[in-house]
Every structure is written in C-alpha cells, then in structure tokens.
Length: 171
Image (tube, rainbow, N blue to C red; front, side, top):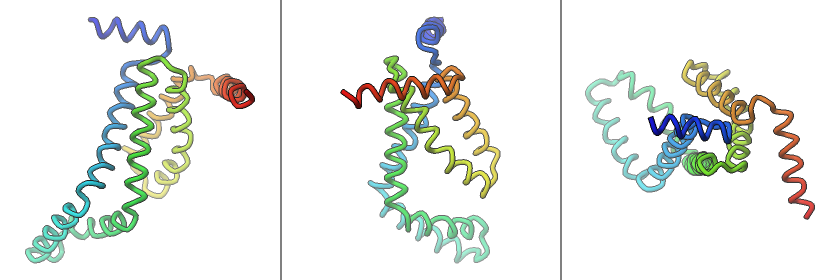
C-alpha cells in the first residue's frame, strides 16, 4: 500500500515509475558486477574453463556445449579489456541514472535517454546480425522507457537539453 502511494506520488511529480528505477538499477548492477568479476577473477575463470573443456572433450569429443563455447570464449578473452570497460561504464551510467531518477533530477532522465540513444545503433546491428526475441524485447523496452521518461515528446526534450546545457556552456 505504501509503495503504491509512493509510486503514484513520484509518477505525478516527476513522470517516473519505480518499476523503471528498479529495472535500470538492477540491469546496471548486473552489468557493473559482471565487469568487476571479469577484473577480479578472469584468470581463475580461465583456468576453470580450460580444465572443464579438457575433461568434457576427453569424455565426448563432439560435445555441443563445448564446441559452442569454444567459439565464444576465445573472442571474449581477446577483447577482455574492452568488455570489462564497457560493462563497468555502462553499469555505472545506469546506476547513476537510476539514482538521479530516485532523487528526481533531470540529469538522471537525460543520462538514461542519451545512453539509450547511443546504444541503440549497436543493439540494432546486433539484432540484425543475430536475431533474438530476447534482444528484440530488450531494445523495445529500452526505447519505450526512454520515450516514457521524456513524456513521448522527443522534440521538446531535445529543445530543453539544448537550451539547458547551452546556457551552462555559455556562462
């Protein structure tokens, strides 16, 4: 009951939902923590993976899961630094944006909307190259949330951004 009242109050005041805050915060935490796990435990995870692959291939040289993972894991390890940086920065930005929404700050909305706009082309290319229903829903939800946060008025939001940050830049 209290949560419903708080959600309705924040939605009336700031056009934001606790569901959006929880969604962005949880995905941000998962991405940030995944990046940190890579930083802290990547060598140990590689050792465990190598041992498990050798054991599985000795039992069944045509193991489907091992053959699929051998296509992904070497690529992952080749771009390890970029992936870690991406996960930590993206997770941190989503966490910061969610915190901005909690405190009813415009920069929280701006950060999440700009982040969605910047990531959209990459997500779209990934969806075209590797079609997936989960990726389609993830992209669709992200766009819907961004539009909801700007009250489905992108022109008004862009004008506000240009005026607000243009004035601060000219000071």
